[in-house]
Image (cartoon, rainbow, N blue to C red; front, side):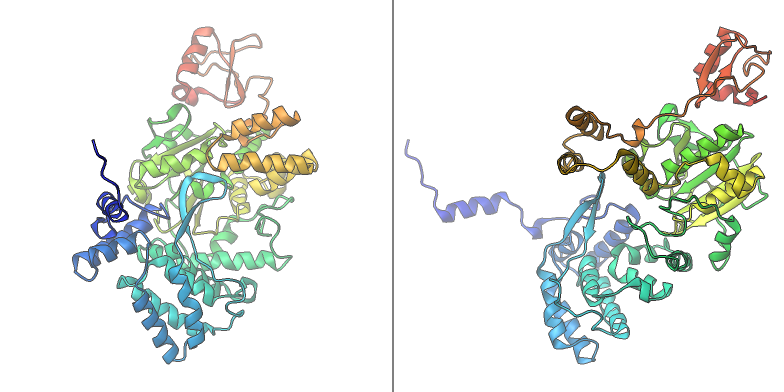
Length: 547
């Protein structure tokens, strides 16, 4: 049989038939590139699909904006030319900005969080293209207003807007500006910022208050290595602050959740880890009469940098004070799959003593709590089921962990010096913890650093797990490269914490059967009671009392 030769034209026709054109693509809210934050991307999709339905964008244009493939270069050029006519830019500056529209949009995973989704990266011009601060602030504001309007018309996608603004802010330094100016800067170069404002998820006043606190810490010596603020985060010296100072710094009262003196209402959540994973529970009932640290958070991944260390500090406080604490971490979010995925990065480091769950009432949280959904988190410290302190947090203002410790001290009725003694040398954040581990380990050889970098890249790419990387390192150098989950656990108390059996309420003695519960020794009057407790410890917590 004679074969028909494939000519270049025939090949082109075959490829054209096999590959769908951009115009054939349909808008799909789940077909995302870039940020996977549901609330922000949802708002963006609604706007673009609305423009399509209104006939203001073609199907091809809507798809290109949604997928961040391209903006309307003609429209953007006209916009920037008009800005030049009005004296906001020069013609030379317009010419220098236009190449940004030809650059491809890139989305990358966050560093060390390869499974947390991808996030857009602003395009950048070569160094020296624009001089530092050559565009006046007043003119930057005017250009930004034009770009936002064009974005709402569907002429330019969000990351082209932020990339142009980042170029206009060349040389900008937050140390030389006010907190209000820093807020204005960040909202122009961060696409999700405007989307959060549009959806009512951003509180300007509380974010600015956080920037003011950052400057207060920087006045004493700027930021330390790793971006740690001098206000208590990333510092070797443990800081404990009065929680009232936190609320005062917010500028005006923010009410989110039950206030001091009010009782914590029961609520339902679904477990995210441990024995309660996938099961309904009520954190308030589980805490009972214990001292209770209850955190409602909008996103699980936001707290990866501090949650583990805070939990271990609380373990030290509980162990050394002989007073029971419960720590509950509840995510309030409408997307269970997104929460579960983001929680995976935290779960492997989180102590088993932390009760983690997803609110069954979505992003609004339990109705009886009245949480402010614009906040990053609401932190509640309670005693005997009643609120002692309530700390609202917004945006990146969660670096003042010392105020949470101050609230813990207040609930326990002890001063800061006494709490510091209970915590001992336990660092309050991952930055300090990592720094101390490095110091204890000593300097690495160039060969060790190169190998750690190599296997670290494999972890980031998902080729191997952290545990496998640690094993490879130990096999090669005979040293430990421990992840947080491999850290030594606190030694349980040698003596039982109870004088009566929590099941039968009978007296226990030195030879009574025992078990370990949350790192402590619990005694029983008989083996039958021990088995009952181990099968369902929550059922008998009310009967568990210290001497």
